[in-house]
Image (tube, rainbow, N blue to C red; front, side, top):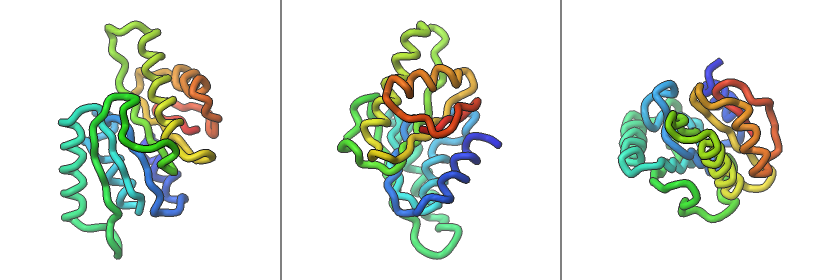
Length: 173
């Protein structure tokens, strides 16, 4: 099962209406920009997509508009989907604002040192920890070059309790 399918199956069991933060940009393996955010909005969640760049935030916003024009798959109205751009640590949301945080880890930079990449993962996990309500969930989608062990170490540093063992492509805390 791919990571997006695993996330959607997990979220299908969650009561709709909760705020979900989708952090980062989707990689080529995960599909077009906005795919994760749009799918979660269609499940009934209020989605806040926070990309790294303004251009990526605009792509997510366009995908949300196109999805709303097409209409929800069933009856009722699709909850709002918001898009913003901010570097790690600069999100405009208060602490403990979200019931779920979905982190889309960036592809590792081949030129960056391994220590720097681990620091970046830790910063992402710490940010997720800051914005998720106590007792709620962080779900990480990561491109293939990101080792599950690196994600597990970053989550441990951010004081996230592991709910499911890391697998290639996704991990949840």
